[in-house]
Length: 165
Length: 165
DNA sequence: AAGATAAGTCAGCCTTGTTGACATTCCAAG
DNA sequence: CTTGGAATGTCAACAAGGCTGACTTATCTT
Image 1 (cartoon, rainbow over the protein chains, first blue to last red):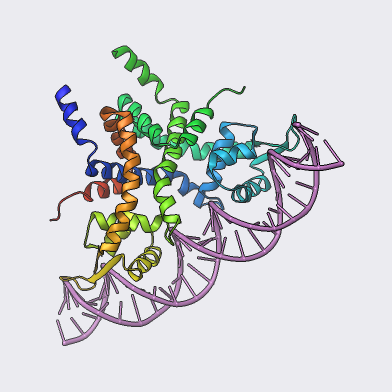
Image 2: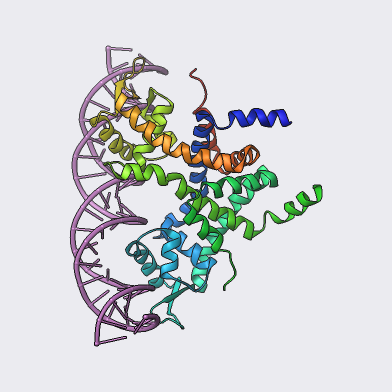
């Protein structure tokens, strides 16, 4: 077993192995977004709306600036998406209490309902993949993904699940 | 150890765990594409050009139809990208020998050079992530990604590295 | 009072995806 | 040998969702 692993250690960084990893990421990401995309296509929404809904659901009361940092887009781009979500009554934007320049974003019941629908679909696929691969594979999966992130994004990835200060 | 794993088995499918996996995919994919994107931004090319170059490099002589299936876009969309690559002398499109309706796509020296540059950047990040996470984590990573693909895409993922018939 | 910050908005541009319609070329089956 | 259908390419029009740059308004901080 140790020999197998040392053998692997010599092999798993070949260009061919790396290329396979790259292609696996490409094809898997397609699957990862396929189910929500199908649902969104029936409405006037796209992947950008899904991302906003996801992270607002995750951090209710988050500010626009914070969301910008997480999503990594310009405020003009986010604003376009956010505006339609507020207009359609999925997201509520309230003036900040301590700093009134800020806007705190939360989902309405309607917004929560859509977020749930999208999330359910995506989690179902994730759950099936996790179940198929098993707990040890999942641990490895998470390790590699984390190592692949930019340091900035890694910070945000961890920050997103910290309890409020 | 067995207990730890059975404990994990109970926990690793919670909604929270699944959400973390979803977010890990999101942030990691950003890192995954960041380096090639930076290079492409300096030219008149985008991610779509990179994908075409990658799979043509991988399967020299592949047909347009085959590429369409792999990339999962419409022929109009692929054609636009392919046309600029041919015009710019990065890709050569030759009439098929056995079936002259088909076009066999190959990279020119210039195309190979750009593909190498992009690939080098992407593989460098992949290599660093693999190294950091270790061989066992990589095996798990690959397992979960494969389980996440649509069956169709999984077929293509395997087919891409079969030797020519 | 001045400067910095948060948010929003307008205008315009690019890439990359989509539909639909249509022409050409060619293989293969009748 | 004709004809149906497949593979390819192309035109036009459109939409989502990125981007830059310029600017306003409100509010906080110094």
